[in-house]
Length: 433
Length: 147
Image (cartoon, rainbow over all chains, first blue to last red; front, side):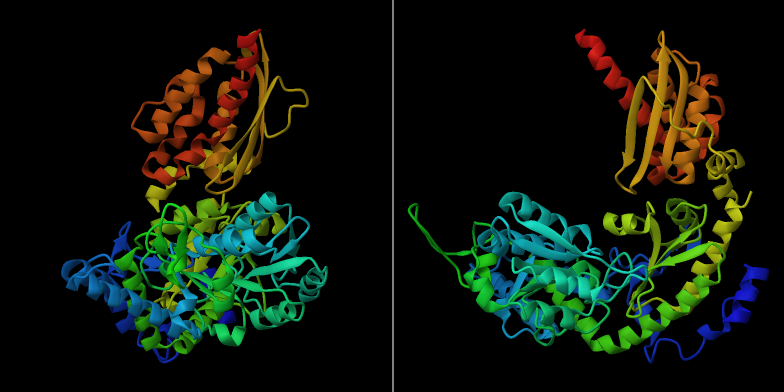
């Protein structure tokens, strides 16, 4: 590592690392994987695209694009109501995708898989339906200090409506949740739900979901996990984790945008009132009274994004075929490599140094605003995110307005990390007066 | 890197590093905050207006090089100008950073921000301080109108 940093320091335009030729990818055939992503084969501003904004939204493999295209070009119809062949085929494919999600999460039943628009809507569903029916004035909701706005604001709105209180478990400078503080908050006897992120989008911290869930359960408190970032990077088994709710988005796991998933334990979902009213969620409607449909339809009012749900199924098939353990190993290697390389750049500070971390590195550079970093990297073909990452309380915790963030997917390579590092040296150069 | 130099000109980097009028006016006649919700950048502007003329103007805040330099250059350009000219100058500046509009003399060195026109996502950075000034002036106008 040392001689590499010396090389970069002396000659920022030196050749890429010699390591990128062999043995990369933890056994994955990266060239083949990359070939499945048409969008990666392009140049931006005359440079090969290096896409490192995967935590915002990942790209889609051809298998997913083709699945959506095939749906629209050969069998699309509305689901659950048609007597004609296209409707039957679409219904079968849509419900087939639900089974794929069930298997992917190892849920007990397809009735526990609700399709929504995104993680945000999944959380809002729980806040509105579960929260609205069980949370009263004086009750408490426990979250952590490293939540995305989507796991803060729905609970704040619930608290405003009901007079409940939001309690926030703090984390250390390294970005690790302080478990004792979290447990202390659960002890008040008034907590109705613990809601926390599995993998922090701003820090890369992996929270100990199983331990945190056990702590909540020991006090009879149900748990919601925001899995938006975690599902594309590590195998998730909701029965092993034990949580009551698990939410994620299709667009972060190689699927189309516009689809989210809410896993919920059947007993809770059955007891919860519907989230939205409308078509598809009813059994019988008269002007006097409506009987609601069984799970999962009770929570899926209106025509869903049918082709996109089917596309999500294809994404899960694709990812499962590669194997999440291999994906995790490869991405971890990238993270270690990037962390080491970035640490060698003077004035660059990595935010989030949890021992258990995955898939992304957030950083600041002394005297250079993340937006300027983002603009300069873009001209080098490198796409990163610069900003507050919809986690403003995390920025406030560290006293910075924003950070730059490089986030990895299965198709990223070590030589792309080298391109990132070289481009960051250019940023420094540009700002040296 | 030459096209990036069009954006990050030396004047901009200089004003980013050493912003002019970067302070708080203790008793401003006008004051407003500007926020870029996209990136969370915040800027506060302070004005001392006397007889319709901007006698003093200052700013504080944290932002990218484009927004900091733009704010700094704006304070230099607006100091001593009649309030009535602000709207006209803002329009001229907006044209400079969005179209190939010429930079009028009244804008001073603000023409160095013309490179922003090739970076649409950065136009809001360049105009943040101006929006804050306009907000500050509007607060003042309303009470005047009701009196």
